[in-house]
Picture 1: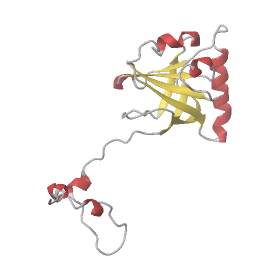
Picture 2: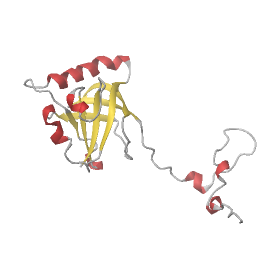
Picture 3: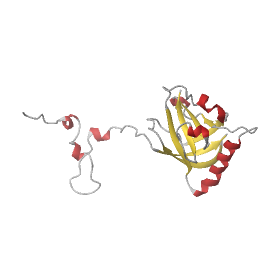
Picture 4: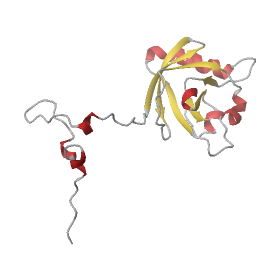
Length: 174
């Protein structure tokens, strides 16, 4: 039986082993049309951003994906403008609706200089207003169809399977 030769590379570019261009050296391969096409957006597993409260910067954060990421551009800052009651987290996270997509990121301070602002924000959410613990809500991803919630460590985060002692960011589809 004769095997069919793979000629997919002939339709617009060099063979797959030539896709890696040498940085320097002889045999420079000219750019092919296929190499100049925009690459698909990679799903980020790490996300760095500024955490703000009503426009005031609190700290810089580094978030690591705990679930399958989303194929969306993530914002460079999150401005917390809503403070829903934390005991209502099953409602605003829509936990009763299994078809709602939720992407969870573990949130840590980006550097030691950000640790005090980070800790201050965690305490702010846990102490809350009027003695009620709060979650943070941001609207930066509304145009992309996602609501953003920041949860302090504790029971609400454990409902999503997180057992650590850092804040988490939940991107919830509408």
